[in-house]
Length: 211
Image 1 (spheres, rainbow, N blue to C red):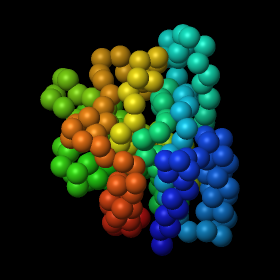
Image 2: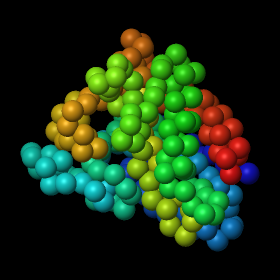
Image 3: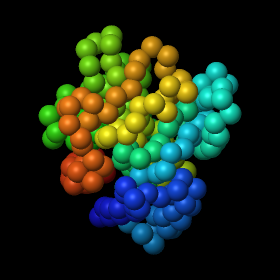
C-alpha cells in the first residue's frame, strides 16, 4: 500500500520547518508499522537548504540564511513553483541506496515524458537533466536520507519557479551546468498542481513494482 498526501501547494505552501516536522512524524509511524509507505507532495516558501556535503564556497555570499539539513547532497533552493516530494518508504533488505536514487530518477523522467520533455540522467550526477550532452540543465534534484530502513527527504521538480535564486549559490555543488524548469523548456506555464497526478501515478507504478 502507498499513500499520497498533498500537504500544501501554491498559496497553501508549507514552511520548511513544518514540512520537516511532518516528515519526521510520518517517518516515525512508518518505522513503527502504524502507517503504510507515504509520499508527501508540497511546495515550500523560498528557502535554501544545505545537505551534508555542502562546501563553504557553495553558500550565498550575501548573508542569505541557509538551513542545514540531514539529507545527502549539497546546497539547493526550494520555493514557489517547485514540486517537492518527500517519499517516506520502507526499503527492502539489503538496502540499495543507489538503486533507490535511480528509481526516483526513473519516476521523474517518466513524469517529464508525460509533458513531452525528454529528461535523462547524466553520468556521475544525480537528479534529472535536459538538453544536449555537455550542455545540460538540471530540472529535478534529489537528496535523500535513510534511517531505520525508511527513507526521508526526496526530490524537487522545477515546474514554473524562478531561476534567480540559483544565481546566489552553487546549486548542488555543480559549477559547469545550469538549471531550468518545465515551463522554460516547454515555453508555457506548467504548475505544480498539474504534475501531481502524473507523479502519483508513476510513483505508485514504479515503487510497487520495485518493492
